[in-house]
Length: 260
Length: 151
Ligand code: FES
Ligand code: FES
Image (cartoon, rainbow over all chains, first blue to last red; front, top):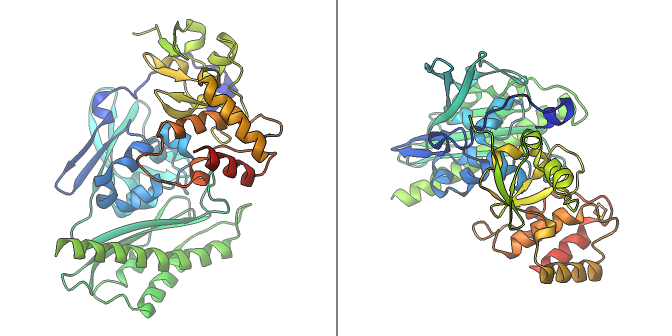
């Protein structure tokens, strides 16, 4: 729309927001499918999604403003392919698959990390459209969280952001599985598996958490721009990682309490 | 292929002329219908001056294509009830929440949405609900106080 108002009105356009299949949210077992026409506000208001894909919903809730979330879609946030897109780190830790269809009707499914290629660039070919996303929801003893840091509280882009997903063994102490994704500190979201792996097999002691956060900060590739310097971003990643892992763990423990 | 778009604006049914169906709702309201209460600030979704209700939900009219709104109901500042507008005006005056007035129509539309139960699902504070309405003049404290008094 912004492009059209600056470059003249479109000669041809199609409205996809009314396609029924694209407006659906499907939940079967722990698999979540979100159609391309589902707005951020609809996703945030969907209570089951908060407990199944918490980190994605944390991000969806802070995109833009009330008005924008009523119009903007989750798939739109993906296709914009901004390195700082607020829903993207959450989509990484929830193993999002992007569903693509072409004009001939053939479909393919792409991992989000392969779909996002560079700032503003996806791997969509001419004639292809995204129809929806499939996500892996949280299991019992598992939690996920997304935090971002901005200079203003609204209508701002992240200086750095982190999503974490943590699953505990049934003892509620030992980390069974962990994943971490960083936003706004590289050309696309960064999946820092090595840092997350440091948590697995251990209790979440402060020293371990610090090691993990230090490795996450080392692995990121931030730039210096008008929002913040490289060094500042790196330090933010360290702090955000500590916070976000602890918050995801608290949610995982909450789900333990609920499943007992 | 569908070429006709019919929508309601402030309770009146209109058929959108083809020349406007590929333009922004903001342009249709201001240029075709003469409803100039809805303002353009940024034209890119940042300022909220262009806020209208679409089927009762606040959206930025600078980011909506008129042609996609077939069958929808649009409410602009001109369509808000008189009684609400005078109450809104009185409170803004009392709290010093208006100066140049450019942001005011967008804020009035948001306030009307809030009054009609827009915040029922999520009990967010007023300051968060008005995150999408920028004001360059008054300072947000006066605005938030006025809007809190109103709600
Ligand atoms: S003019 Fe639409 S948000 Fe600023
Ligand atoms: S009163 Fe001037 S922009 Fe708000």
